[in-house]
Length: 594
Image (cartoon, rainbow, N blue to C red; front, top):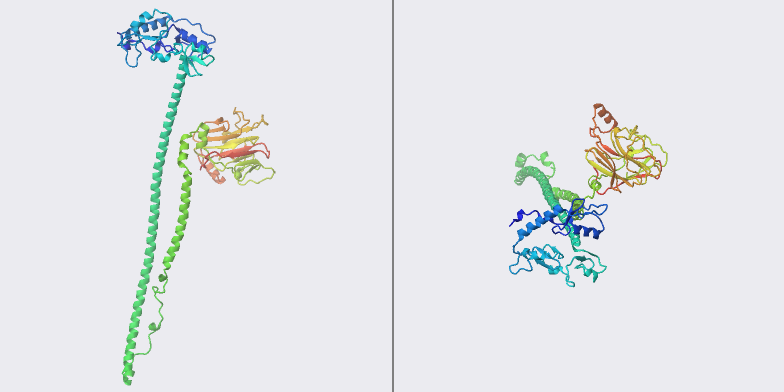
């Protein structure tokens, strides 16, 4: 008996339409093999001459011939398989022979006419019946047979969502949408496989997002723990500082108290000595006066004058019952100072709590979910989210023909011909241009400008080293990378000396996005509404070699001197009409950059 490993790979001999071993195999021009009846039936039902596998269409239906060599290989395979399966008992899950008695052998074929399955010994006499159709063994054959007509269910009715036989098509299912069961199976199988694949992709996406969210939450927790530790250290240091200050105030008051006590003790000691001396003199005089001896009084009476130091009214000692200390002057000073400090500290803490509350928004978890579940849909959205900056016009650099709004976001033409003198050469003299207030010497930045209300406009960036008094050629070799546009009224307009070689149609643009990557040397211009790239400057050289003379001249002119000069956004309008306007639009989540 041949082993299973000695047989050819079975899928090579299965028709992709009926999923059975080839019967009269034919080859299409694209090189795929099918049963002759299967491919012919497929073309008849679909009305298209194309390959079911590769979907290659043919100009006309090919004339098919049986591939004799391949048919011989299929027959050889069948003989080998029959020989290998001869006498094998049916295992659980396999289709048993309906003719065999116990034990039943494994069925080799099922007859769709007899509606029975046969093993190899019982199949030999059955093969002589040429009109009977044999297929691979089918389990639960009773579920695949029409109960009304006792015929095999060969079709599927989409209206009733059930299998039907050929006779049913002429009875209860006339006019219904019906398709051969195998084709319906293949379609449904393909849809199920596609759905499974899509579900796997969604599952993988969800898993990745779960990992990202957990990682973000973990990072947030670690950051929060670190912040709490630092905040605890800060407040501990603040409390320690207050305690040190309390100790200093206490020590100072104690020192003053000790000094006052020492001074008071000296005064008390001196007064006690003086009082004792006065008491002794008074006692002597009273004793002499009591004897009534005139001669003794005149001879022994001490001097009647009182020393000057005893007659002086000495100042009260500072430590007295009526002194300032007894009135708790220090306590009042400390109370008032501490109340003021506490009020200032309370206001500061209120502001701190308010800033902390606003820093995360009212729902930090919701913002975190939005960040994880709303990734950028295209490159422009990524740029808008990550590289947007807040651009404001610098009125000090504007040509005299231009007017800047108070908020620095709108640019229009001056209605009057008023001449304004130029101070320190900061304004553009030759062209109606203006710069932004902030320049950038590193990183990436992006901003958007509404140009729909301007007939002829120019946007881009320039180096800070350009001479605005003589600047007339906005070209890369002169340190300027600009893009100009115009409306339908000026189809032949050409901005002199500008990068006007871009093939992108400039009519109908509403908003232009300008993106600069300083490190890569790239400047790109986007049609924001169409979300398309209009033009890009690549391999730009922004850095420059600065000599000592240039450094001196830059310092004299009041500008910075660096090998990495700043790039300033530049704006321009060529048509002197009061209705023309350029508007700098806010980009979601913009932030200023240094």
